[in-house]
Image 1 (cartoon, rainbow, N blue to C red):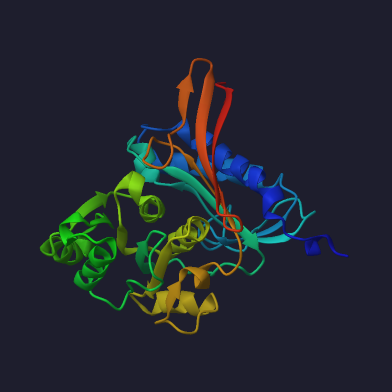
Image 2 (cartoon, helix red, strand yellow):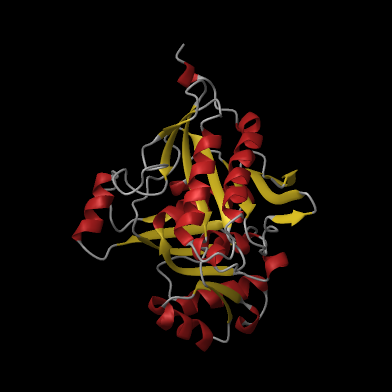
Length: 322
C-alpha cells in the first residue's frame, strides 16, 4: 500500500500542527516592532516550512503564500512533509498580520489548518465578501444576499435584544465606508480592525468573551478558507462569495477549478471534511497571548482545535530564549 494511502488521523497530527504554528510565531516574534514586514513574514515562512517538513505527511499546500512564481516557499501546490504518511491538504498563513507585527499592534497570528486530501476549497488570491456569526444560531439566520441592515435586525431578534446591542467586526478599509455607514445607521456598534480578518471571524465564535456577534466585509479569499476551518472546529457559521476586479482575477479562479463565479460558499463548502486548526499568538491579542520573554525563556500561547470532536485546547510552550 502506498504510504500516502495511510489513514488520516487528526488526533495524531494535532500536536505536530501546533508545533508548526509555534515555530512560525517564535521566528517572527523576534522582529516585532522593527518595522520590517517582509523580514517578519519571511522568518515565519522559513520556520513554518522547516517544521512542516518534519511531519510524517504527504502534504500539499492549497492555501499558501501565492502562486509558485510569486512565492519561492509555501506556494500553492508545494509538497511538504516527509512523504511518509497520509495525504493532506494544508491551508496556512505563516504570519497573519505582517503590519501588526512590524508595528507591534495586537492580534498578529501564525495560522495553519490541515485536513484530508481534497477537503479544502482552492481559493484563488482574490477578494471574498464574508459574513460570519458564532455557534448556537439557526442555520442561515443571516446570509450574503441580505442587506447589512437586514442581517443586524435578524441577529438582534435572535439574541432577543435591540440592534444597539449588536456588535459587528469590520476590517477598516476605504472600500468599507458605505458598509460602516449603513451598520451604524441601524444603531449597531462596530469593532474596527486594521488587519487580520481570520482573527476577526474567529472573534464571532467566542462572542461571550470578545463581545463580537458578527463579521462583515471583504478580505482575502484564502483567509476566508482558513477562517472557515476555524469555524468548523468552533461551530460557527461563515459564508463567502468571490469578488473579481478584472478578467485576470476571473482567470485565476477558473485556473483553480472554479466554474460558478457567483457561488455563495458556506462553511462546509469551503472545508468539506474534519480538520485541525492551530493559531499561535505573535503579538498580544484577544484570542491568544503573544510571544513574550520570561526571564531566560520565550513563551508562546497556541489555540489548537479539532472539528471532529469540537475540542479546543490552549497550549503554553516555553523554550530557552537563545
